[in-house]
Image (tube, rainbow, N blue to C red):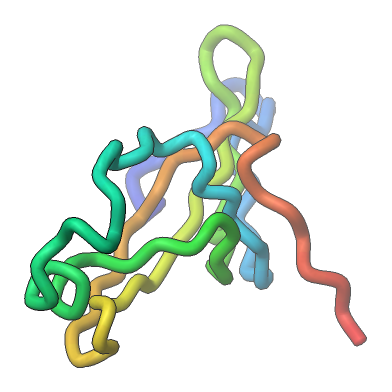
Length: 102
């Protein structure tokens, strides 16, 4: 994913990492529809997102305005867990929380 990224004049702007994180999904807009008003096939086959979901941080990358972005992979499931997808997300630092190592 980062093979073609170059640091400029010895200044590092990409810090690869590989660690578990929790992703806060509260920034996503609410559906506005009550679950008891939805058809069962929507509830079971639609994408299910919790308020906080496990993910894997792949890197920190510095933006040209000086701020940082967390590059995170998140795997989500359908309501019935028969379907899955993995998305690469570019998130602000406040949207992730590092999972403490035990």
